[in-house]
Amino acid sequence: MPHRLRFDVPPALGLLPDAGVAKHLGRGMQSGQERPPQVALRKASVPLPDATATRWSTAPIRELLAEAMNRFQDDRTAADGWLAPRLHATLRMTRAEAGDNRLWNYLAMLVASDYVVWRHKGAEIAEASRFSGPHYTQCFSRLWWAAELFRDGPDYQPVGIACRVGVQDVLNTTLRLDVIDHRPTAHALLRVLESLFRAGVPRPGDHVNALSAAVNTAGSTLVYDVLAPDAPPLVDELQDWIAEAESASRVQWDRLPDGPDDGCVPRASVDALVPLFEKLHAEAPLRRRKATARPTSEPKESTPVPVQRGVSLEKDLPSWMM
Image 1: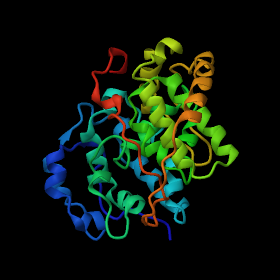
Image 2: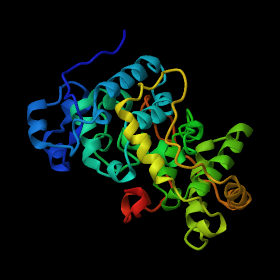
Image 3: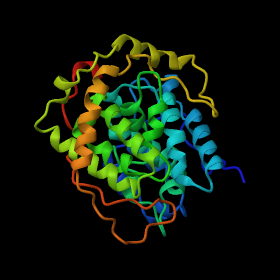
Image 4: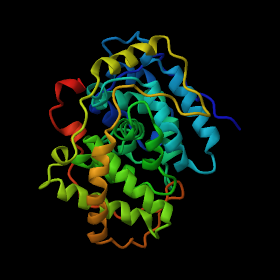
C-alpha cells in the first residue's frame, strides 16, 4: 500500500531547539503510535529568516520520503543511498545552514517523524538520537552530510559507495572523522573501500572501521592537505545553485540529480593518497564483530572505532562555507 501523509505538516521548514524535542519526544512518537503534537511543537519553534523561499518548502521533501518508503519497503537500509543525493539536491543550503541542528529537529519532529520511525525503528522504538542528535546519527542530517562530503562537485555517484547497501559503517563511523572535510581524503578513502567491496572481502564493515581509524590517526601527524591539495571551492557557483531552487524542477526518481557545480576533486590529489591509504589498510588490525543481535531494520555492523567528533560541525567554519 502506498505511503501517504499521516498528519498535517507545516508548509515550510523552521527551527526547533533541542529543548522542544526533549519536552515533546516520547515513546509514543518513537514507536509510531502517537502523532507529533503539532501545535505545541510549532509554538516551540522559530521561523527561518527566509521562510518563504521555495527551498524550504516541505512538500518536495514529503514526496521524496513517500517514494522512498514505497520503493524500499523490503530493504529499508537501501533507502539511504537513494535518498541521500536527492535530499541534498532538494534541500539546497550552505554548510553553515546545514550545521544548525534545529533545522533537522524540525524536519524530524514536525514534518517526517513517520519516516524516522519507518527507517530506524528497532524492536520497539526509534532511538531519540534519530530525531535529534549528532550530524552523523540524526536520520536526515547524516544523509545530507554524506551527500555533501562525498559528492564530486555536481556528481553524486560517489555517495552511493558511502551509502552502500549492507555496509552502514561508512555512515556510522567514517562520517564522524575530522579528516573527511578534506575532499581528496574522502574520495581516496572511498576509492580504497570500493576496491575492497568489489573484491568481496569478508566482513566489509570491519575493513571500513579499520581503514577509517588508521586514516584518522595518521591524519593527526600527516597533513593531508599538503600531501594532496584541494582546489578552492567556487563559492559563486554554489550560491547560484542554491538560488536556482526557486525555479528548479523537483528531483527525478530514476536518475541522479545534479549537485552544485562548485568544483570537482583534483584527481591527482586523490591518486597521491590512495597508495598511502592502501598501506594504512594493510597494516590496520581488523576488529572482530560482537555476536549481538541487531534489529531487523538495520544490517549487522562492526563495532565503531573510537574517533573524534566530525569536524564539519565542531570547528569554526571558514568563510567560504558560510
